[in-house]
Image 1 (cartoon, rainbow, N blue to C red):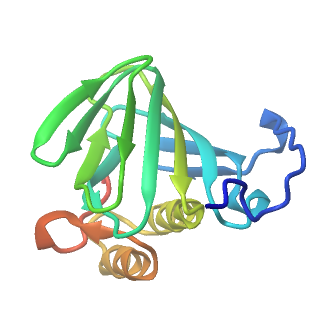
Image 2 (cartoon, rainbow, N blue to C red):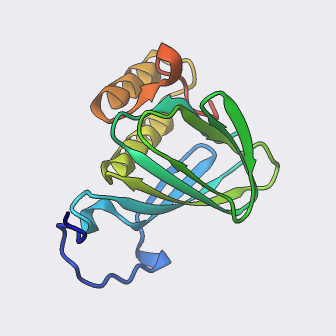
Length: 168
């Protein structure tokens, strides 16, 4: 078993002033280690989520996600259960597990995340673009989201149609 990654093993210093930021209504994600630095193997990012921001229940067939709450809280759905995650709590979601989350509190939630493969960061950037260009209930919003769900490893939970991300 190979224990070292295939991507170049060179040092990377990531500074806040040079990070790519993905912003959409209620959410801001800064790519600490973008997938371009790992040959797409994984991505590491920090999210700040305002009240009501998050992701509706969904699943992935091959993507794994790790969330670590720095500040605030997240109400996370994992399978049929709901957990409230606070500072210091972590959630690891393997492929095939239904999950979603929302910030239920007035104060922002700050969360560190790792996604592998790193193409999940491209999905998040695409979602932000659709949300920033369209209005809630707009047919173009639904079409844009449906295209992204089809392109990336993202499936709505329980066979539902592509949901509108929170907040709308």
